[in-house]
Amino acid sequence: MRSLPYFCRGEVIHGFGRGSKELGIPTANFPESVVDNLPADISTGIYYGWARVDNGDIHKMVMSIGWNPYYKNTKKSMETHVIHTFKEDFYGQILSVAMVGYIRPERGFTSLDELIAAIHSDIEEAKTRLDLPEHLKLKEDNFFKTSVSTTANQILNGHRL
Ligand code: ADP
Ligand code: MG
Image 1 (cartoon, rainbow, N blue to C red):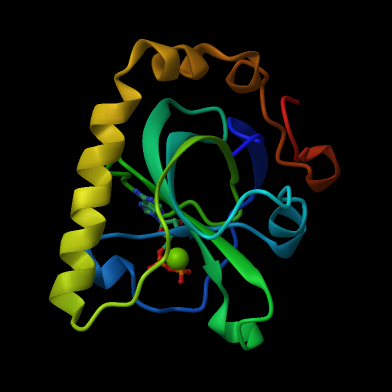
Image 2 (tube, helix red, strand yellow):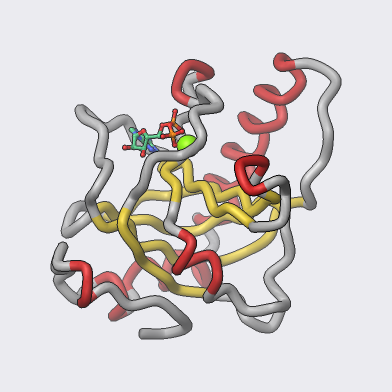
């Protein structure tokens, strides 16, 4: 995918309550404006990369880009699981992500256990791959050095901002 690494940021909004948190794998949802800006060559599936909430620390992440059932699968959604245990939810805060690589396409699961196992294996894969020097250096990218303002009109999306 030519567009990788892809950098974007946006406010964390409420998802469609599929109960990801109950599965132990909360996913922070981006608003439509961020999803609509995705380059055409970014296909649906599971990605890994770096994430930062507001001006906090930079953590590893896995992201699912899929078809949003809330909009009868006509719109995409972008859901990020940050590989870190947060003390509190961060709805309304600004999530900055660097999508670094692709793990696998979307797929169906025959049971919840199978789905959870797949996500855990995606998380392990992300952790390992992000330790590669070429990926570690993206953590130091200027994108994460700029201080993020929570005033909505300063939210920027796109490649290498
Ligand atoms: P929703 O359907 O609203 O997205 P989830 O069950 O997926 O609900 O929970 C997502 C929310 O959990 C995020 O918006 C965020 O505020 C919070 N959260 C707490 N820890 C994490 C984490 N490690 N990764 C992503 N979101 C987290
Ligand atoms: Mg979610």
